[in-house]
Length: 575
Ligand code: PEP
Ligand code: MG
Image (cartoon, rainbow, N blue to C red):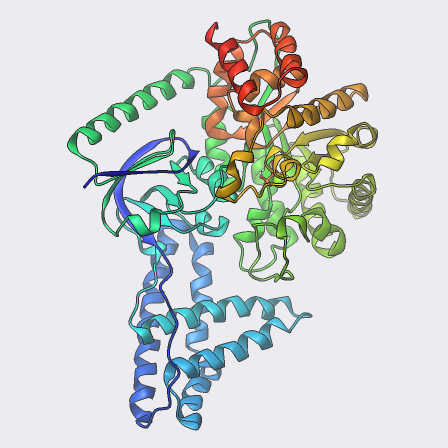
């Protein structure tokens, strides 16, 4: 029977493929005393053997589809399986305590994890805790006879169905086979959704029910434009969506004609339409979509894709590749924004009640200065290869900006005295994501070179609504006058000091928001690469003289998000 499941449209596009359930199985077990020790030991040994051969297959597949570097994590897992200190200890525990293999594995792996995690002065050993956790999970699954999902083994076209996807899960998806994903939880600006847009695969989040309503292998049509998932579609559904997919493709071809044009409004004004990236691999999309620069390079993905803290040289190579690839066009690099929903397995952060309000981004950088200085040095060295701009995330106070900037200046001086070539024209700015900074923009404008407004966080903090929580997703209200007033305050404050203001949150690529932002005089618009041509085509139709009045109306006369959406829609219907 055909059914439709609705959720939040998170990434455009339409695709048809079979369901792949990325659902973690229940690994709970019963602890038992055993009398037949040999039988228990041989059960352990065969689980270890199957795990090892499974890891070899996953490793080879990962190397083939994702690259050697991504595959190395599985080598580390195989080494743990081959380490007699670990597996021997499990075997010994079965013998000494006459307990079942599951219980012995659980106890030994917990001991190892605790020991590794306590090695705070040895980050390499700390990182091994995450590996032991993964390996034990795999061995446990074989002891219990259940199977773990292995996305690296996917070798046919699928649509992933999951409770949630972490940013690192999303980073590992192989676009060749993964045609889309649908999750139970999440919001439009959660990082998995943002990454789906940069991978150019359709996505729906926040359905609440998809994992319980869809079974492995069922045929699905995902409509990421409207947020509908069709389960077991009828022949007429297939035809209808086929037609919609064709129309979408035709529209994209039309936009593509604008690829090599600058973004000029109907009254002849130029605005920079730039793209957001997570890794140097995203450059292809930036170039193929004709972006006029990179307005946000989320460098934390460099840290998340790595098995350990990336050193100065590997960071330098990544930044240099992006700067060279952009051939002199501006590249705004944001320093590491870890915390919130982005974690590093090798840098355990304290458990927090409210991670989005906790230890994250610039707060970590100012605290762990060695990590921050390494990143700044890599950036400064790369600055000789293009037009680099640096910005700091999650700035709440003027003092934080000044402290971060002072460290930047120190590292610049150090490099120059070491004889390293460094550009002397690097703009240093900040993100406006915290209402305190938006309100006090006039003071910040005196010390920064530019602002980039991060609406994903600015809206969540202003409305007090978690950006990843589907139950409060109605409070993601970019056109709410409260948000528009903050944005206007930031743009005006920047201009008063002769600085520029951009936006790199998802709202910058939203066709309702763009006319309002143009009316406020926002200078730069940075978005998922796939939105660039759509926005360029929109801006070409708009006259900024008319938009000033429109945005003033939205800011001063309207009461709601919906009223403003309607205001813009009506205005656009005459275009
Ligand atoms: C934002 O908060 O709007 C932003 C662009 O940063 P991120 O989405 O990475 O938090
Ligand atoms: Mg943010």
